[in-house]
Length: 134
Ligand SMILES: [Zn+2]
Image 1 (cartoon, rainbow, N blue to C red):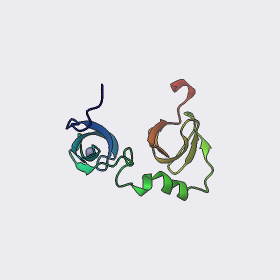
Image 2: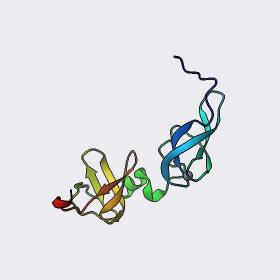
Image 3: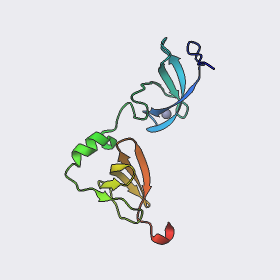
Image 4: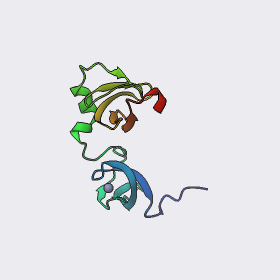
């Protein structure tokens, strides 16, 4: 089977970062360039139409400076990273060193869950768990 590239189906769904929802969500393709690349997408969650950019897929169009890895990396370059563990104690502004994901920055910490910005994407990690909870 060959790919039918000049007759790409409309309403194809692609994962894209919604600038409004601030999350990686399913988007419906609204329009495409003649070349077959995606031009505009609509967020299936909030309905916002936005430009689709392949390089930016997975990153918000408007990056919140408080959650941008490069900016955080600059801001906290002097902080010594702490090794991440589920039983560790972390707080807002901490720099962590994760076995798999590498360096990350804690941007929120609540109810033993924290949001950490890594170079590829933000992740929710647990912390302050007792051995018994794991
Ligand atoms: Zn949205």
